[in-house]
Length: 574
Image (cartoon, one colour):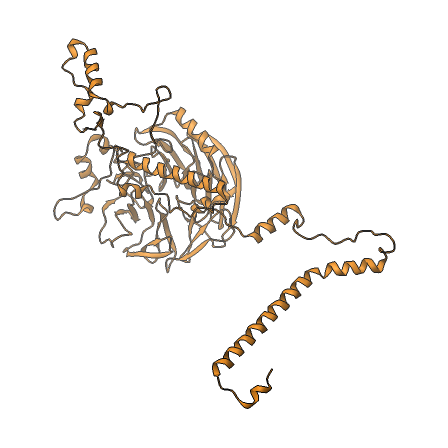
């Protein structure tokens, strides 16, 4: 398409298409002190001259995007276009696919300008990275990175459960004996500290760092970041584990009585309470890709749940003994489980089959997966970090660290190369190179956002909240077209209207005069109309039968003609 100026009816002249005369005129208009400066044509050494004296740019159009970058941001396979009679739907699908292609190319272009890149720990020749201690790493890195390794000695109220906020800047600690504290772990600024004077089973940040939930001995409590109790939810009793679904504003809890409950924190109401009939629920994880809850049971099975159904969507037998811990990666592709049989197994959730199986001498009590795919497994007081556990079988850990006490919980910090470890003697922050995602989305989880930006993000997140009814195994089904049959649409229409609009009305004979509307005549006309449909069927059947008889006779004549043998009795045949 060629652009035409509305005033002079000529194509616009770009700076690389200017003629030599234009350049000379521009040079005359310059000041005497600027005579030594070069014009745009002289700077652009890659231009070529056409037949009309104009310079032609040798690289028209936009720069090509590498295919590998496009694959990274691909949004599934394109579907078939609707038929042409449905032209409105066809136009909508074409426009949406064009917008998706444009977004894919733009993301691939901007990916080249990302400021940071992930890096891993590499040892010298014949040196295992698992033998490198945290002190050696701190001595080798700068002061800012070295400050991320620290220990909090809290031996009086341990062991501790922990959780990082979505932005990765705030840390929440909950001691078994009632100690609860939250802080900005990067600046070491304490936000609140209290003792609830009863057992704490689990702690969890909600949608922002302003609210957090504490599963205490009896009920579930909601506090703000100043330590003020906001709610005591008595419907949620004996809660052992919690998971928060950030895009649905749902807090999922698993209790000692075998109930899986969902709390909508935006309105403060219980969405559903499901009795799993599987006993005590102390192993819980959630899939960040599709918001499915994974529960581990004492009989070695792992079940997948949604708030839409009372029965599990999937039930997998993973271990011969009880399940101790479950973790799911951020893409929703792999699930890692550890059991009482001292085995660590990696499953492909798409096919529900095991990929790798590892034997640990003492088994793993706590598991956690980082944003870059590193796996942390805690055994007693030893924390081991593995790399690429779902690829080639791993023979040795990537890193290892011995904590001061028995490990109670591990969690990777988002957007940081940090692993938080809660144990019986307090808390330890480990430096794990290559664990966190180096580039963050400022519109989703910005670690450096201000209070005003947090408030605006919270309002937008509430407006874009996903309803619990949309949670399913395959989230891509929401964008697909429901090709319902004509019978299904007709049944839905009948159910909505309350009657069948296509059904034939009962025949009512018209009133006639001169004795033609007697009861006998009326019944005779009713029978004639009633048998009209049958007449059509009978007529079609008779025609088909006559056609078949005719074809059969023609076949017999052809056989007789092919035989060609005449007998003395043929003259008597008609």
